[in-house]
Amino acid sequence: MKLPPQRGPVSAELIDLLRTFAPENDQTACDDRLVVPLESEDILFSDDLQLSLFVLYELHYRGFDEVDERWEWNPQLLALRARIEEQFERKLREIAMDVSYVPGDAQAVAQQLFTLANDDGGPSVSNFIAREATLEQAQEFLIHKSIYQLKEADPHSWAIPRLNGRGKSALMEIQFDEYGAGRPGAMHSELFALTMRGLELDAEFGAYIDRLPAITLASVNMMSLFGLHRRLRGCIAGHLAIYEMTSSIPNARYARGFRRLGFDTPVTDYFDEHVEADAVHEQIAGRDLAGGLIEYDPTIATEVFFGAQAACAVDALVGEHQLTAWRSGKSSLRTATERMPA
Amino acid sequence: MTSDGSKIVVCPQGPLIVRGEFTIEDGHGQEVPTNRTTVALCRCGSSAIKPFCDGTHKLKNFEKRS
Figure 1 (cartoon, helix red, strand yellow):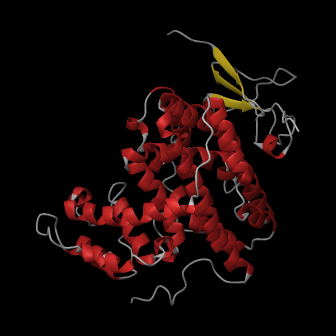
Figure 2 (cartoon, each protein chain N blue to C red; figure 1 turned 90 degrees about the vertical axis):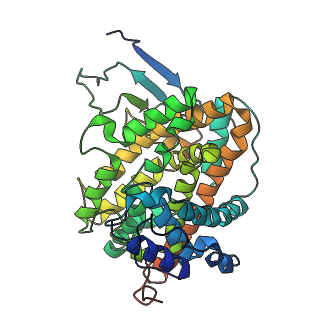
Figure 3 (cartoon, rainbow over the protein chains, first blue to last red; figure 1 turned 90 degrees about the horizontal axis):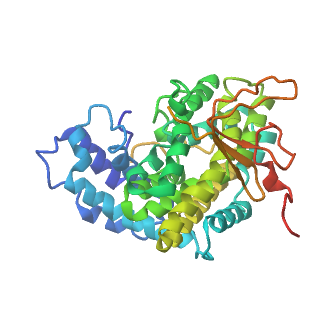
């Protein structure tokens, strides 16, 4: 993807650095001081910091057009990333609330995660899409989702070498399915691209980055944070478990909404596939991945539940952002004014 | 090549998870197509995509003690 336009001093400096210099020439840029003045701002809604974090993480996934690939492991960029991550993680722990996990076997873990998913009082974007979204709102919904769904499953794959035993087998079984079980064209990310194209949207990864609000970037940055740190392997497992557990029923509603708007296969394939797939995945993710992980190492339980609760909390904020905009007849994407260079 | 056959997990308040080598047939002996090697089969009776599970049991009181 192309480097996105900046959204403030940190991302301006970062993007300029990536665009202009070669890593061997510059070891001093990206001064830490840039991050400090933004401490008081709510990092979940900071366009500048969420975009910067997204760009820093993306160096580990597919990189950017015409950006030197050596930046990925540049110590200064890693230091900048760590500074932003520190604030981000602190905020996530704050909004995720306390974990009330009762120790037990894998089934007990699954049960508690299902309860958490069931009690998730987040706003129902799926009901809105099913019943009342306009075509434009359905397009916006896909644009928000695209920043994760076009690389669906990738952030959780970072955890593979960090797990073992039952938890690892479970993760592999889920990921194999996410990546289309070896069938070319059947990766969930590819099905999502078909859905986007069916609504005449650009399915190139990152095509709409400039339109995405900070909170949408925060939801995908959270996955990269959990995925890229071995220390947070429990969190990424909990994140995946709760994602799977809150997926099959909403996806059936999305499918209904897109059919209501006059679409059918292949546009609805992505959602139909997820109804069936995630009814399988949620069982494996709850009992074998999260439960297996906790059985193997009970000390990780709090992190698994934190990951799950953080996922619910951030996604509730994304949903709230979308529904608040749509219910007042506004776009949930960044407006032209917001996207004007500072 | 050796085979371990198939294994079925009865998920409390949830579906049957079937993993391994299996085929699913309907009452007329017609194979029910699936692309998965692991499937979840509806146990609560409320699924809209039977014989597969669609997660609807979570909205019901299936096997829940009141």
